[in-house]
Length: 146
Image 1: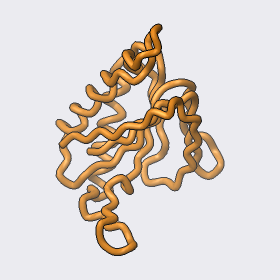
Image 2: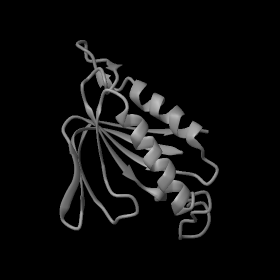
Image 3: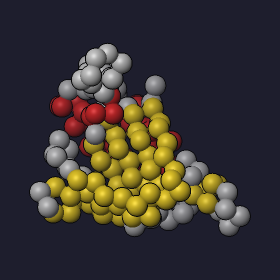
Image 4: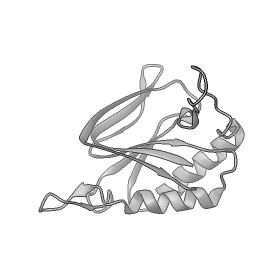
């Protein structure tokens, strides 16, 4: 699994002109599932995501997690994170999981987050979405389970 994590002041996702998820300060997380991923990959990334110290403390150092900063999460599925641009001009998606597996692990990931003490909003799996955000920092990180 691969996450692109952005610290945001606010973010929202829209499908067909309607808002499906919106947060104030927190993390916007784009998530992609690889064809060999399992629930163990999702569990690892749930713990990693919630423990990342990317919010400033009183001294201005990145020393607080999203939970400690009382932020929220906006989780958006994005299989194109596994796009391979190394050959030609059209990305290849051979490493991306097929939709059924990807949906199962995406939903598992979201549900595991919702069992924790944090607000979680989402987009809609496989929908064409518009993602709006105000980056904070900017702070953008990539985390992978493998």
